[in-house]
Length: 130
Image 1: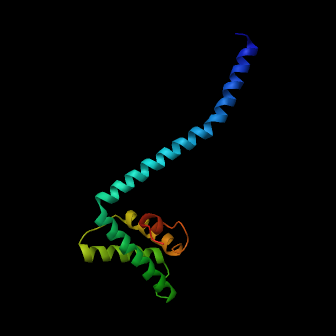
Image 2: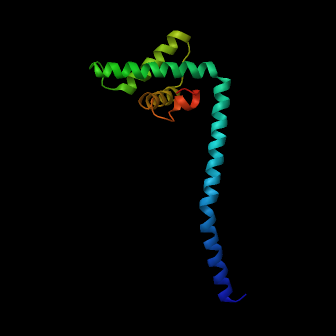
Image 3: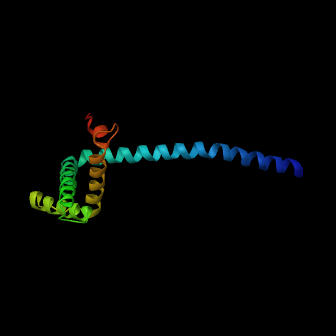
């Protein structure tokens, strides 16, 4: 192969990779998202009662934290909500839940609370509510 052919081949392969790379990355990301969603659904199905327990407590905690903050009783809403959920679950069910799980449930509840009436909220998508 001549030097000119080698240079052409390198440039061609480089251009081909640049054209295909976004497609391959989007396909890979889509597959990863599907796997994570399937895993989340399996986890929710396996631990449906625990998931609902944390979800309910987080939704209540978000509303309580918002009211307490509006009343000037607290300054840190998330810390209050985490403590609320921990105490509620410990008292009602006698179990301890990982703080990271509680934190994520609170984030989801906050998102859903403030986007409740928008199309595509987590609650509407997950539970078919309007």
